[in-house]
Length: 264
Image (cartoon, rainbow, N blue to C red; front, side, top):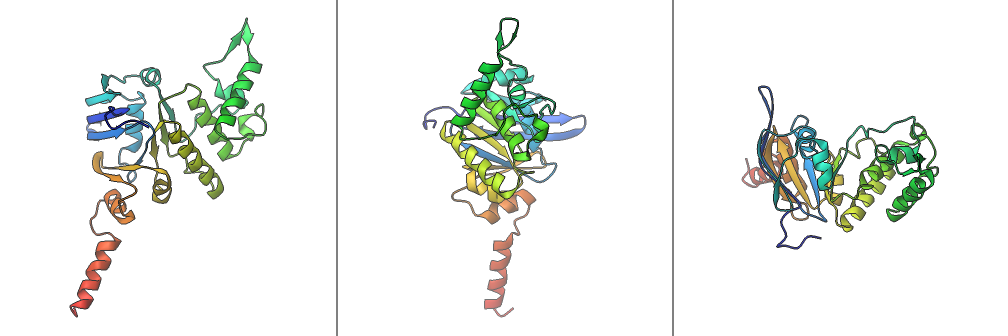
């Protein structure tokens, strides 16, 4: 966990992104600290995936400042983000169905022994990583195409963690999971936070966010529309920020009660 005096792990200031005449992000501010889960929420088209791609170096921004551990950085390609310690798991997981679990984990970073691959060492490291995270996949040599959605998610997460990142970007990781798998995944996020990782969690599910996040950053039409402490902010206040209205359930109910008391 970062100390109060430490600079944020990641800081975005007045970051903007355009696609031609379309302003996808405008003057966005965001901070993430080590050992902290920040949920990124917003309606469809709010700019969440664009912001993730910008942080991951996939689509560079046009204006603004990005700082990593207090130093200004330029994220113009994925390698820039990876070199800093930023790993990303996208909603489509980007797995190779024809390869087994070990092959997917080490795809692009295979361990070699002589002229060939060190299959035993890669399998051993895969087991060690999953044991450390209390994760389990019955057969690491099974093709990824035979795995459940939850198991595929585990593979994608473990592949991202092999590089020992400091910041993990999760773009809608829970959307396709069942109830039991969702609970397991939220437990994993808490475990990673306890290990000191900073996590940016993109989600539409406010209940899941309230269960695991420390802060919620809301985007609306590419702009910041609120930054909330999960422990002290009402569900209705965050929801109203997401949908862009102050007429949430609480205010409407309060108004009705006042009208009734006045005999209106």
